[in-house]
Length: 172
Image: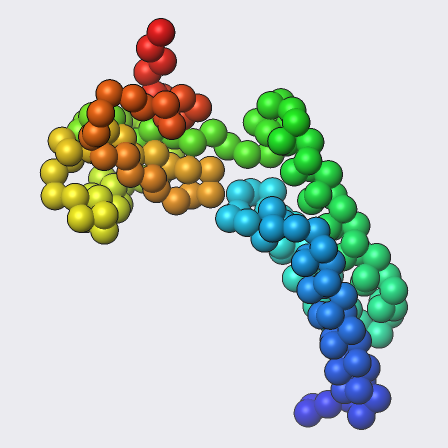
């Protein structure tokens, strides 16, 4: 079947346009953190946005007002959780994983690599991408909370940016 009826197509066009505009406005209003790099919580919210938009577009049983309310609820929950995570270390630990040390002073941390399911090849590729040719030239490689790798080159004696990284030796 090519299509049910012209009214179904018109419904999809009108509701799709209005739902899209509402979603963009709500996301814009909610701030940059709603669209920042993803952690597990952000992924869930993003999938929920997509599911809600799909329902708004394709279901005649769901009113546009319901879809906009669902978008607003998801944005509000995202805002509340991020606001709480900024103010409460407990909530932050619940919502976000800690960064994890994968390489320290040129030595791969095998246990961390296994637990995080990262291969040595991925670490080497990351270092090559940074123009680094020797593991020994690196103070640390960190798996960040969003799944990206950060590379800290060996320079100076301070490593204060690594203070919150799981597996980094705390000196003091």
